[in-house]
Image (cartoon, rainbow, N blue to C red; front, side):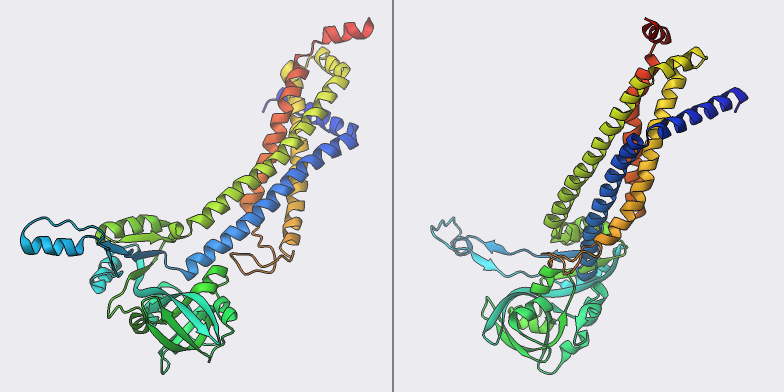
Length: 426
């Protein structure tokens, strides 16, 4: 850097410092405006990220990354088709009711072998799934019954770590065992060691002993999910030796949708990735995130108008100083750089204060007690303070300050020193 350029930068930096210290109140208001915007942005993003990160993390941990299933189907015209084949003609019958065909996955062992051969699949297990009424002491609750092979299912979903009062292997207890979600157990008043009865819509019924409670922290899962042995679920739902779901765990859960599409093409059965199974919740989260970002960036926009107003007023008040600088040889771009530097300094100070305040506000919010959420069991706000929140908020604050400085800097640079001095001497 040449000596002239260095001396110019030194002079401009001195000018910026003098201007910032000339009116501390006005400078403080501008810095505070940016700091408030940065603080709110960091805090809001921390809360949204904490809730979303916890929900997604728990969902990935407690559910298969991909499920292959066979939706209910109906066979229409079964009787008319049989008569037509028997008599070699066409038979049309009115009012013929379709016969529901139970959900089944044919040849599940072969299907599991096909899926396990995929390089993305870490583990796979067969599940006999269905819905049933669970009753205990005169109270009833709706449950989604998962009939599993404990060893194979544990490789797909870590059930063991979420159990209370027992172990996964206790499902093999004499007479059969059941693991109830703790929310469902509270609703029924059931505890480990109690017996509950399960009744399916098809008329199957059985009585099983509660061997453990499932506490995932995801409310709707703990209210509905229960585990039994695969053979017990097959008897309950009248499946024989068949199953109706295949559960997959992947090495990379972010590739679940691609793997689901490939599984569909390989097996000819519908496959659902965890993102699609929870699309309503994820969509709601994304909508809330967008709205909160609009609010936080709106606060920064208000801060920008504050900086714009301060610099515009300063440009008008310092007309004589601008004329003197130009008379001494400073060009229009030098004056503009001085005003831009002043705006960026206000932004930097505001960002620094806002980041420190945002860190402490996030810590306070993490201790705020809240009512139990509909999705997650938590007694306080979930806050995830990530470095990228500070980078985004700080970058937005600096950008806002820089943009707010452009118009005042441009107007200050266009001022004609001759007209200013003539007007002063008139």
